[in-house]
Length: 396
Image (cartoon, rainbow, N blue to C red; front, side, top):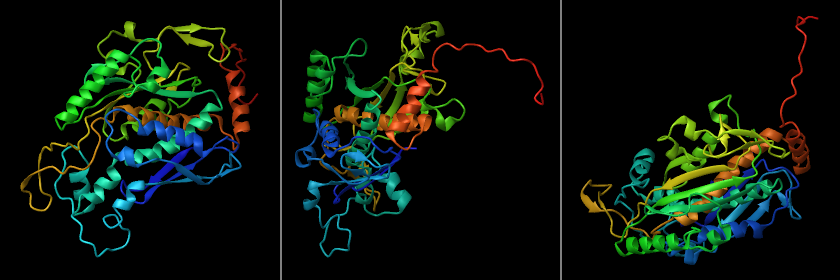
């Protein structure tokens, strides 16, 4: 229903984004998308690239006079660093001599990418494998967020650990404090320890990873489905989060913690409620808002783990792509820690999945039609009144 494509290399001319399936009538402007892109550029441990770029997505199609048209939305985003790479990343053949990248980096796409596509220059792989592409995903996700906002669905994220240093996991989250924190952690004491950890890694020429939690509030019951593996909402969210650069593990709710507990301690007890939007409540939300591949009306919670990124200022031993000789791995300007901005990227990809499942469930070519279908569905969510039917034969 809702899908997106991105194109572009890290040091190429820019990024291109197409988002398809957004219904007509959704209010949308470039400034809203820019506000999400700016959040992605922040975060302690970022490298020098973020001092160069000022990401801004220009809408070139699918929006008229501030409202979506129902047609594909096209956007472009300039790479300001392109001016320093015009020969190295030229689309046409160049006479300028440039150095090929042949020193392979452990943990990156370098070796499998060059082997798969038959390249003799790692740059042909690393440019697209770069996390620069996630700026395009944040732009696409901002459009999905704007659609979800029409139905009071809100996505937020916070860092729950960096380098093994825990932040806030349970309890009410101070979201203003999260946005103000350079590491997106609401606990100021933990935030400072995380900053110190990043500084230590930087001084050592190393990198550090962590864990992020994304929460979607006011998601209705019934998105996704139990009937096929590829329609399960938790599977779709896990795939989207796992596709983010350096993500190596995903948990829905307390998935990692639940495996060491008894079933009686894990499952969320169901209670009836007078709340017309959520007539079924839970005492807890260890399942993270999903059951059987469907949302269950509780907040949708997903956690994902980001490994320390693989470009190190003090490189690991590796091999030369051409000769197989022992060398030090290639180093290219990079972040020390990308955990804080990963939360913003996580929000974007989860928003795209939720928006897709929402449009799939409620249909509609315009946002007004979508709203009518959604509101009619909400009226059906209460306790079922059993109607007993006679045992007449099908032909009667």
